[in-house]
Image 1 (cartoon, rainbow, N blue to C red):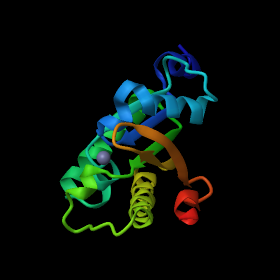
Image 2 (image 1 turned 180 degrees about the horizontal axis):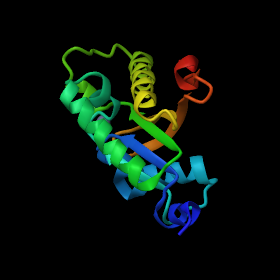
Image 3 (image 1 turned 90 degrees about the vertical axis):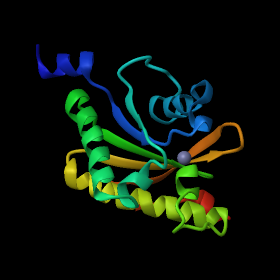
Length: 171
Ligand SMILES: [Zn+2]
């Protein structure tokens, strides 16, 4: 079997790190956003992405113990070695309980919250590029209400070091 055949059968396009929050996953809302963002609305049904869900997502990588950080890197590494994605996608979200539980952080506004979420995406990308230099890292911030995800904004791309948050800029 060639590498290409192996990738078609066992590979996936993306490895995703995001939060456990039910608002992202109810009725596959995040999945729909991912299909719109990366597949122009056409759900391939398979071979698309490996999801790794952890409370606080990037919070684990940049604001917790070295042990917890290394576990996340190992888990992402398992996806990378098994399924050969080309991209790691980091999805943070507004109103995240993982951040609310951190007594070192007090958000003063939604703009402040998004700025911190973006800072952690950039810091996470730096860490992950050190471990997986062959991969592109993309960062998103998901907008939510009390029940569900409303959409997600692309705020970071390691391939051009592009960092922007239109939603924050417009606040
Ligand atoms: Zn969360």
